[in-house]
Amino acid sequence: MTSVQRKFAAGLITLFIISSISYTGQTTKLTQVDCNEDSDLSKNLRKCLTSKGIDFEKLCVTKDHIDIVLNVNTVTPVDCRIINAIRDCTLETVSAEPVVYEVTISIAPSTQNTPAQLVYTGHAGTGHDTDSMPICVDVLALRAEGTLSINFDTVVKKVSADAGRLGVRVYGLHIEVKKGKDGKPILQVSGRARASNASKSRVRGIVTALVNKYTGVPKIGTDNLKVQSTRVIDSRIK
Image (cartoon, rainbow, N blue to C red; front, side, top):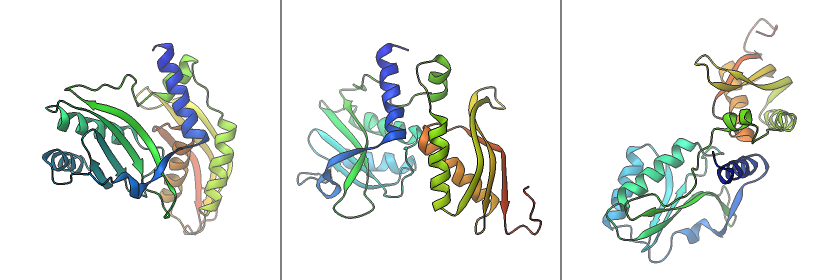
């Protein structure tokens, strides 16, 4: 991997962990006056996104711009598979067009008059992808390579705090890189978790989602996370 790609990847993970980019305009402004929702390009793009199971709130195509606004409840960081599926659709639908389109993917805000969260900006057109950098990176591979570090202490604190607000108490949370059953690296989560109004599977799901949120890593193992729920008569940690 080139040094430029490494810097990009490191910056991307920093974006995941520290902050998110805000779109300068409102989501209502993303749908521009000259959007052509009835054009063949718009229809084909909408059809492609739907066929791939992409949930989106708005789609705007102008003479040189494609805006796609994902639903407000889209999980962040957005799964690379979703972003790449959208990129594939834009490449497929504009392949015969003589124009290079700027492609913007964002998430609709949860409240009015707040900025949309920009998650991707790139280009597509003239029969090929003009983006010079890959949008998806293997976080664990970069960490093993020594070009990226994850502050697990910070991640643990943030996950524990967020879990508490969601009704899940976490004790002795520990996160480390381990080899999964397929031999590939995963993030292994251990410790204890307790919730009064959630099933064990729900608790594991919450912890997994939060670890993903603050690391950008999709492969997370929770087999070593002991979960207790008051739904279980036996009060011991199972």
